[in-house]
Image (cartoon, protein in one colour):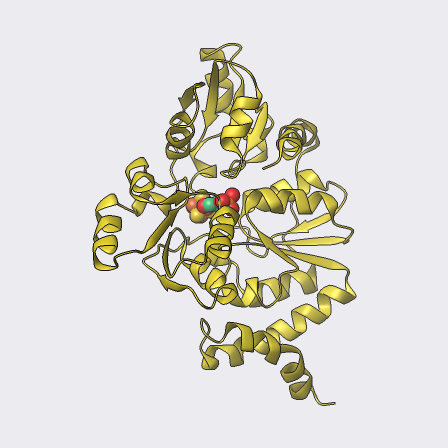
Length: 329
Ligand code: 13P
Ligand code: SF4
């Protein structure tokens, strides 16, 4: 069978699924890459983990597992693959390495950062611990291994309140997302000492914008990520992690919905919920968008961009992520 026929056979079923969100002209470029990546990952016993913000050709075309950051961390600890390709950002690849230190973890673009992760260093946490002696540190998983090594327990947006309350204390240092800290503080009696990090994607949404869309689309259901400013969450009908948002749509099948989050999320969820009408005022994450099919293929072929964590950080940082996965969702 010639190569074009092989590509057609292996990728046509995927295109049938995503044709509502990927134009045919673009698919012609994606299809040969998808075919090659899917073949090569089997030959190399590699697994492709993708975050919910990855583009539909990655999410639906090549990912073996696509989810929120909590589920990606758990999946990384369970996989029997030799190589993990993380289609997400640097802290997600680092977290996968912490959960599977003996595996080769590759990130297709090492510049796929995160504004929250770069807002704080391990040294900042050491200073905070001096300022508030004895107060436990809860860090969002959107942090570097350096910060995680100074952390008592990590959390994600899926379990932040549960993690904070699990400590059984009156006060915690909660890093680095100021808005997620406010969201947690409004849902618990535990006193929260926060940092001033923000997500450059979610901080851009405004309550005014949400209310205008609600006025123009009576009955629309608005669901937001907890990294949004508090007034945006207040103007929304539901707040949850990316998987929490996607499950909300799956379960409730609203007639019309708006996901107040990164752009690809609505496209990916729309494919899985064809009867739901999505209104899509969204913001792009420039870091998530650094991951593309050509970069994934290159990384898989040449096994480049390996995540290495210094020994002195690994054990301590791993502990804080493991504690989070034991607490669960
Ligand atoms: P989730 O943990 O909800 O997937 O969010 C990760 C993230 O980077 C959101 O901006
Ligand atoms: Fe970081 Fe925000 Fe991008 Fe998520 S969406 S990776 S929090 S910058």
